[in-house]
Length: 215
Image (cartoon, rainbow, N blue to C red; front, side, top):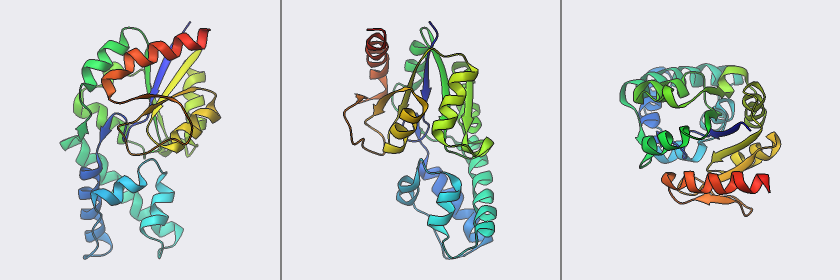
């Protein structure tokens, strides 16, 4: 039976909010308002949302087309910044991925722009651990649709999605997968679910959850 674990990015695999805030501020001050700054906390409040929603939150005074243009420039520079500088990985991330890779097929699905996941994989040379990735920026599909897309095109028979916010749980339910909450991340879940206190807890919790699926 083919078992897969699909990961969210922000608040699950890493925290890139500081670098994202710095890169966005550079673009905004160059392209839009010289006195406008985006903080790390601003970014954490919108992590997990699609880029069109973020544009409306940060730049409500702009038209949709203007928002899309400015957010696109921010996203492009953000990708380049993170590809050069990385972010903050959660403890024991690579060792845990190596362990998981021995038993499961690993993937990433995020609501990010195109190129963001690749920046993460390139900086840390993590492409060796993941078989497939998908994101909102590639196809403008919802996270639930993209989780289902990755499940179907990789022939997964049992699937866990690991995320940190309510939207991740909702998308997992939409896709028909099973959810594990990264409790150390940016959000809470309004129902009782399997959870991990730290990333290194995942092999044990995932094994239990997959076993429960068989029961």
